[in-house]
Length: 415
Image (cartoon, rainbow, N blue to C red; front, side, top):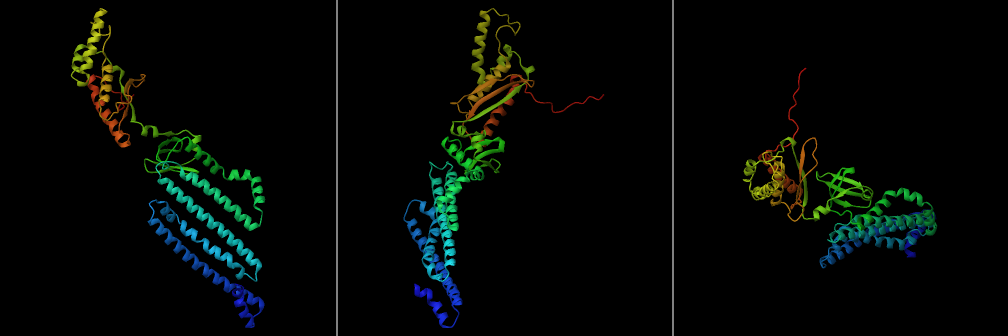
């Protein structure tokens, strides 16, 4: 190779050119030739490695190798060959220029570090995409872990690049870096907090990709679509995207609806407010009228018989309804609500079904339904709940009750 490195130099000297000019022209010609060789070798290496990978992927059932190609791992790997060639030929190109060779080798070493980082990044992205295809890991924050490894690799790459540029011992640089740890922690505070939060979120299984969460502080109400090192992306039900810090998941309070999604039903908890002045005792005529309601026929017959026997046993004067035990229209209506909900086909009968009277307020007496719908899909859930309350609101007059509502018009008295 020494003959090649002096070939143009000797020609120029024989032609009568000055020694310094011959050295510069010799270096330029060899450098141009080297660059052309590197471009050609890089092109051929990429074509060859890609062809080998394509043939290999056709013979395998796993999609891991397909993901390697997708993330450009073969292409980045091919760049190593020109670097090796350049490293071998730099001595011949810069044979008369030692300082230029030192500078060029430093640049080449840094470029080699960058190529190594690209290769590692391609591999990590491939692992990330592959892990996301596995059912057991599909809902895990894989992005966070990959980002941690990538940050660690980039930090190592920065250290080695700095060592190459400054000719500093790596141990000396690391010791200096340790002394500046306070500054580093301050700069990477969010990253460090996000990393710790990601580990806690995964370990405690607090949030998974696909979970429906409600985070009132950040106005988030929707499905988790991404968890990475610093942020969590939530697609709200209006299709907007809310981004919150990962560490907020362990430092703030939020609601995860996974328990509801995994259970047998979605809770219905809503009340009708009855006007208090419409509540009254039921006489025998009113009871007989309500017995025509099929859901109440058996209940009223049994209940009326039990109450009559007890009143007779205690010699109660029933000329006044308040004496002894009595049925009330609100009590019978509450029983009707319970029977109707229990017999509704969309209600999960294996979960709690309860109709209860809440504390009376200035508006009236709330009668609340507490039950669970079988269908947990939001749209269907709302339809089921509306269907139940449509019926119950329409049934209120049959019990001679009234619902509370604010006056629709306000009368003004002129002075």
